[in-house]
Length: 612
Image 1 (tube, rainbow, N blue to C red):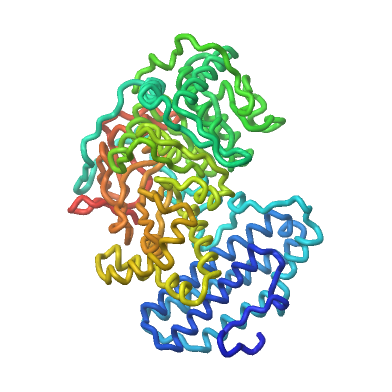
Image 2 (spheres, rainbow, N blue to C red):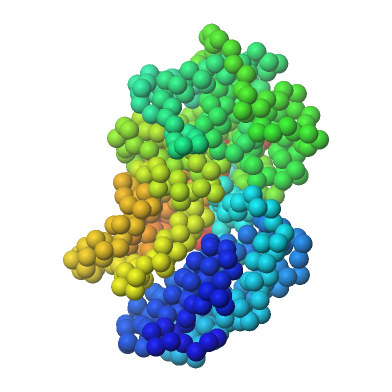
């Protein structure tokens, strides 16, 4: 590397390092900036805590950048056309990430991090980006081989790294797959913990939504992405369209009780199709867009679909033999009469859902009461005034996202539908009250925040580098409020405004846990995140931790209506109205019986639920 200047330990040189891809040049500059911050902190004798924070930030950001870069190489075709180059590149990434982790661990164990360590990291970056031309190779490929109209959409693909949680925001199932047959009785082997009482709406999802639409008629139920921003759809609009599509579906060869797949990305029309199934008395079967042909075929075989609503023509794939096929962009409509879904009982099956992490997906049958109880439990834990807005970035096949949408509607609030690749831009445009996220979602917001901090002047960047430390102090009640107020005014408040997080009331992380460092970092930014534990078999909800208690394996306390225990072999058990009525092919599960979650954990004497 060229000799450092008087001001910087690691100098960025456009001519030497630039890939001419703005996204990755910004990320590389941030890596250089973190090395400079670490060098300054060590050279000026800053506290060991501050040095540790920068090391953790360097480790976290390294993982984020490498994952993003590898995904780009796959998405644009470089990994296929030059497979050896890609795998060599990824191997180098793994080596560097491992080395950074080792340095961070040594520091946490009390060992001194020498300047030689920093020099190694700086020289590795120089060699990787410039001297060995590793990054220049994919940049050259991008300029010479990729079409001019290509746009990289982060999140469409993800390469699994050590800290990655899933393949995409919708495939974020860090929770173990539900295990154990649903009809196998089991007894608790320790204390139980019970949430507050819960009042669940009677009857079907159709009856519930009809009541919601009548109550909130002209309020906004949905924000739909359009060419020039977001368009509003009222509850009356959504209800009217869902009823007409329900009648249109019944005008085909579908009959009440038939199972209808929905295979499409999250959108307003996805929700229309789902509610239409409920009004028509059909059983909706959401299929993940991320499923490959084998997974989709297995799911179709398990369920026995009579119809499918799809975003594209099935062709010769596993959906081609489904009798009734409908394009989600051209849903059938008819004049609704007396729709059969209004007379369905709450205990009847409303939907069959799948675990996105399972190689051979098993269907879990959820009753109308299960879905409504899950939404009601979220409302009890996270009360909202009418007129709020929540996000929908995840596939609605994910029961957690779907139930979150029901929760928002039950409070008279809107669901903002956005493409996952436009996550950060959509947050800024929508300014949500509720962020419905997963670990991958927060990783991506984190990466964008760090990129923005890296572009600030030295003083603001230094304050930004302390955010995790401030967050830890805020969560445990220590520290100086006056110091936080100054940092918030200078850096964190403006960032919340810029990222659309200024009006956030709740930040929720489901389908996997956010680790302690990111919990502290977001708390420091003024965005305290609540971890939500739940499985597919519990409609995505189960136990929730407060921001202050979302540490060291704590899942929190049971949400309203649910009761937790653990078995003799250390498996979490749960019972309550959200729980599946049974896996497909089973004889069903009595409501009073404990459900085996497939998650190792326990219930502590004070009622706290922990996961291993």
